[in-house]
Image 1 (cartoon, helix red, strand yellow):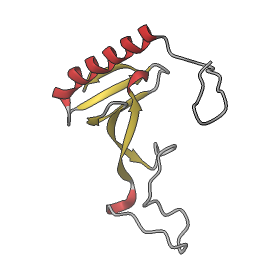
Image 2 (cartoon, one colour):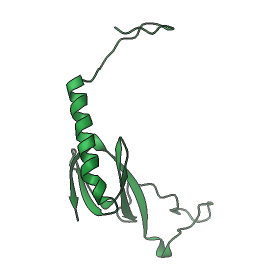
Image 3 (cartoon, one colour):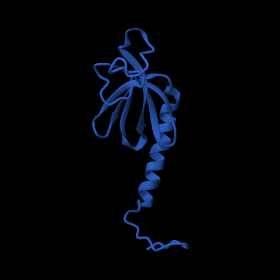
Length: 120
């Protein structure tokens, strides 16, 4: 049981295994080294849940890989488009691109959930 000097006692309900933490840090470092040369390249990413994403590798930080994807009106479900105008006359701005059929968004993907990254 851990105690806090200024407050009530707290009970730890989960603590990561130190060996697992060290392994995940190694995976993260390996992923950074593997992906760094391919920034701004088109890739396909598969998550451990089986989801597939195609886009441009935009960047990485200590927790996420950032993928720029093109969203069209047909595949836009689940992505927020601040320029989408669902109801005319309600004060929403229009589309900033001709025809209003596609937009680029950046999708953050959690590093430890990635299964495979392939060049396209």
